[in-house]
Length: 350
Ligand code: HEC
Ligand code: HEC
Ligand code: HEC
Ligand code: HEC
Ligand code: HEC
Ligand code: HEC
Ligand code: HEC
Image: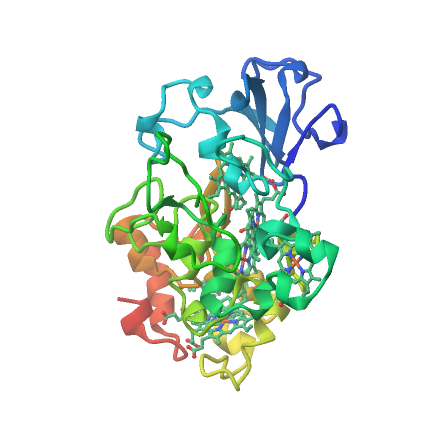
C-alpha cells in the first residue's frame, strides 16, 4: 500500500508513464507534474495552481502501457454537475485528497503525509509515539466488525458525506471520519437501484467500477458473519493485492467442512473442473474481474456472488462461465449448470 502520491522531483522512480516519447494524448511534460498518484493499475498526474492541485488531462494505463485521456465526463461521477467543465475547475482537495493522504485539512489544505499512512487506519498517533500503550492507538483488529471494516470502507467505497456541501464545496470522501468511528455517522454508500445498470452498478447491485470493494462486501454473507477485509488482506505487506497466500489456499483456510457454508466435498466436486484447472480457482467464479478501473482493465468483484448466465442474458452482467469459455453461449452454460448436483438449478440455471 505505498506509492500513493509522490513528487517526481524527489522520487523520479515513481513515474511509470512514458515521458520520453511524444504522444498526442499527453499534452504536458514532466515539468508540469507536481505530484503523481498510483502505479498499479493507472497513474494520474497533478499540477499545482495557487494552493490547490489539479489533474492533468492524460493518465497512464499500466497494463496496456499507453496514454489515455483523463477527464471525468458528465453522467459519470455524481459530483460532476457541481464543478466546472475542465480539469482545472476541479481541485483535488474535495474530490480526491481525503483518500490519498493522511489528515487532509479542509481549511489549510495541509496533510500529515501524502500516502495511505499509519494514522489513516490507526487514528491519531502522536500520544502513542510519545508514550506507547494499547489505549492510545486504534487497533483495527480489536474493533467490532462494523468499525473494523469501516477503517477500509472509508476509502474503498463510493458514497457521499451525509452533509454536503461542506462550506460550499462538494466532497467525495468522508470528511471528519477517523478510524474507530462508525462510518455511517459521516457517509452514505452510493444509493443502489435494483435493475439499473449505470456508472456505479450492474443490475444485480454488483459494482461496476473500481474502489467499490466496500459497497460490494457489505452485501456478502461473509460480512454478515463478521469477516473483515483484513481477514483476507495483510495490509502492511507489499505483496500483490496484499494477499498472505496465493490461489485457493486463502479461501480454503476457512472453507472447510466445519464452515456451515462449505465446501462439503473436494474442490473439484464443487467446481466441476479438474482441481488444477483455471476453472477451479475460487476467484474465477466468485470474484470475477468485471469492475472497471481504466478502459479495458478491471478489478475483482467483492460480493462473492456467483453471477448466472441467465443474469447475463437478462441484464448484460458478464458471468464467469462464458467470460472464460468465450466460444460458448449463455444457454450452454445454463444447461451445464443445470446438471450440477452440488448447486440448485432454481438458483443458478433459471
Ligand atoms: C490500510 C490500513 C493500515 C495502515 C495504513 C497501517 N495499518 Fe497497522 N494495522 C492495520 C490492521 C487492519 C491491523 C490489524 C490486523 C489484524 O488484526 O489482523 C493492524 C495492526 C497493526 C499492529 C499490531 C497491533 C496489535 O496490537 O496487534 C501494529 C503494531 C501496526 N498495525 C502498526 C502500523 C504502523 C506503524 C503503520 C504505519 C507504518 C501501520 N500499522 C499502517 C491496518 C493498517
Ligand atoms: C473515497 C476515497 C477515494 C477518492 C475520493 C478518490 N480515490 Fe483514488 N483510489 C481510492 C482507492 C481505495 C483506490 C484503490 C482501490 C481501487 O482502485 O479499487 C484508488 C485508486 C486510485 C488510483 C489508481 C492507483 C493505482 O495504483 O493504480 C488513482 C490514479 C487514483 N485513485 C486517483 C484518484 C483521483 C485523481 C481522485 C480524484 C478525482 C481520486 N482517486 C479520488 C480511493 C479514493
Ligand atoms: C486512506 C485511504 C485508504 C484506506 C483507509 C485503506 N486503503 Fe486500501 N488502498 C488505498 C489506495 C489509494 C490504494 C491504491 C494503492 C496504490 O496506488 O498503490 C489501495 C490499495 C489497496 C489494496 C491493493 C494493494 C495492491 O497494491 O495490490 C488492497 C488489498 C487494499 N488497499 C486493502 C485495504 C484494506 C483491507 C484496508 C483496511 C484495513 C484499506 N485498504 C484501507 C486507500 C486506502
Ligand atoms: C476468514 C474466514 C474466511 C475466508 C478466508 C473466506 N471465507 Fe468465505 N465465508 C466465510 C464465512 C464465515 C461464511 C459465511 C458462512 C455462513 O453463512 O454461515 C462464508 C461464506 C462464503 C460464501 C457464501 C456466499 C456469501 O454471500 O458470502 C462464498 C461464496 C464464499 N464465502 C466464498 C469465499 C471465497 C471465494 C474466499 C476466498 C477468496 C473465501 N470465501 C474466504 C469465511 C471465510
Ligand atoms: C466454476 C465455478 C466455481 C468455482 C471455481 C468455485 N465455485 Fe463456489 N459456487 C459456484 C456456484 C455456481 C455456487 C452456487 C451459487 C448459488 O447457489 O447462488 C457456488 C457456491 C459457493 C458457496 C456457497 C455455499 C455452497 O456450497 O453452495 C461457497 C462457500 C463457495 N461456493 C466457495 C467456493 C470456494 C472456496 C471455491 C474455491 C475452492 C469455489 N467456491 C470455487 C461456482 C464455483
Ligand atoms: C474473503 C476474502 C476477501 C475479503 C473479505 C476481501 N477481499 Fe479484497 N481481494 C481478495 C482477493 C482474493 C483479491 C485478489 C483477486 C484477484 O486477484 O483475482 C482481492 C483484491 C482486492 C483489491 C485489489 C484490486 C483487485 O481487485 O485486484 C483490493 C483493493 C481489495 N481486494 C480490497 C478489499 C477491501 C477494501 C475489502 C473489505 C471491504 C476486501 N478487499 C475484502 C479477497 C478478499
Ligand atoms: C477461468 C476459466 C474458467 C471458468 C471461469 C470456467 N471454466 Fe469451464 N473449463 C475451463 C478449462 C480450462 C477447461 C478445460 C478442462 C479443465 O481444465 O478442467 C474447462 C472445461 C469445462 C467443461 C468440459 C469441457 C467442455 O468444454 O465441454 C465444461 C462443461 C465447463 N468447463 C463448464 C463450465 C461452466 C458451466 C462454468 C461456469 C460455472 C465454467 N466452466 C467456468 C475454464 C473455465
